Image (cartoon, rainbow, N blue to C red; front, side, top):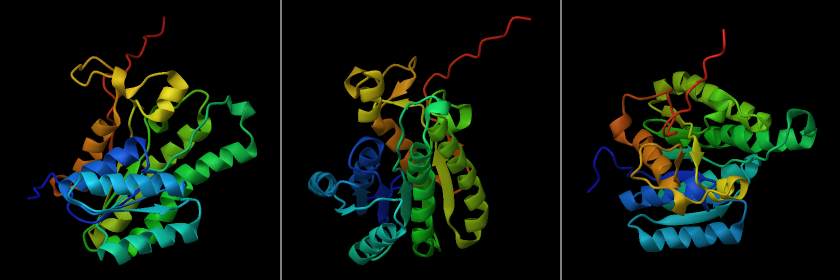
Length: 254
């Protein structure tokens, strides 16, 4: 039986073949929600959907989708509605990044990251808008980089900052349709991407320790679940920052 902290309506989760998106989809399906998951790799997302369905009460379908492609995004949303008959939650998680100094980022490199992170969020939100109206929830996944900045990731940080602002703006516009729009801006999370960049794996993270600044995907999924659930009925336009112990700002010499 669901409670106010559970997600029980059909959901779309982008970038869900691994990492945070996969953890979110698993959490929703464990609550009994049906989930449409997508990524750009058809084989990978088909396998992920099958694993989610086999492991949890909720059903899952996997759809190949590049969130930069408006037609593909429209097909994703329509597939979810056709399969599940409704849509209650959208989680905009698909993202891209790479490290480079600002002056070394090419026009194509800048545009590709902004298109996936920001334009992808716009595409999915616009496609889902009519289906969410009347009582839906959108959770956008940004990053503390969008709040604090991130050296050698200016394109990523700028796109995530825009998502934080878009969240606040849409929360005003969509409140009249009973749609809540919130954002999660995680700190370091031990995803496959972080492991490849920094060599930190999820197995190295001790969730019982408070004194840490690296989390695991399931911890971010818990926050997304809260924001998507009825327990957050009085929360909209907010950005939560699960980041562990924040760094202490050094006092400059005077």
